[in-house]
Amino acid sequence: MRRRSRRPNARLQVFQRGLDALDSIQECVPDLLVTGVKIEDMDGLEHLEPFIETSLPILIVTSHTDARFFKMLREVRYDGIYDGLAEGLDNLPVALRQVIQHELYISPSIIQHLKEPRNITLNALTEKEQVVLSVVGDGSDDAQASERLGMAPQTVGTHRKAIMRKLHLHHKGQLMLHALQQGYVRVTPKGVFYPGFQRRIQRHGRPKATGRLRRSRND
Image (tube, rainbow, N blue to C red):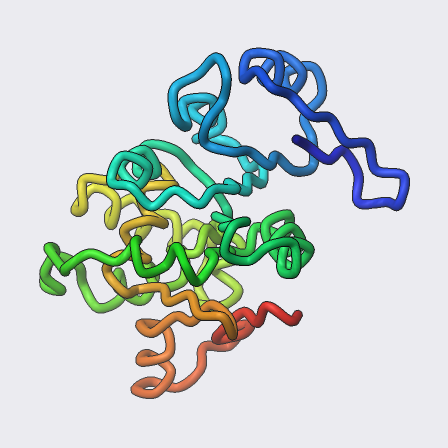
């Protein structure tokens, strides 16, 4: 399913086959891609692989909590995961609004399954890299993160590359999943929190152009 416009007369298209959806997206890039996990002609989330290096907002709708699903998440990029079985339709408008703005949305029922024991020591990253990871780990691009961190986008990009090199990550989806699993980004029913960024504020004061410390789901 995809939405071409935020206006009341938005055009929706629904596809049962992944190849049909990919062909249509190549012809006209939508404002938002909403997808499930089980696609008729594709395995798991492989239909999302072409969008790893794009900025297309992607919301995955699923109630799957098996190990294979979370393994597949490491190989793709997404902006949100919505558990329709647990949340019904009540919070779907909020999820759609946040995802289309590239604000991370994870259903509370999914969060617990994203968490894993820490297997990367804090010494693997410098203090500044940990702070940057805490901010870019929600999917923010370099320009968005630079406003909150008070540093140039090019500097954010340099730190992002160093983080991904040290952690052996290859794309944005892996970076987001690592940030969630390792506690650099915390998603709660009340909003998205950035513990590393908040610790920096407590120790060193607020940067000149930081933006918000957390993103509320009621914004």
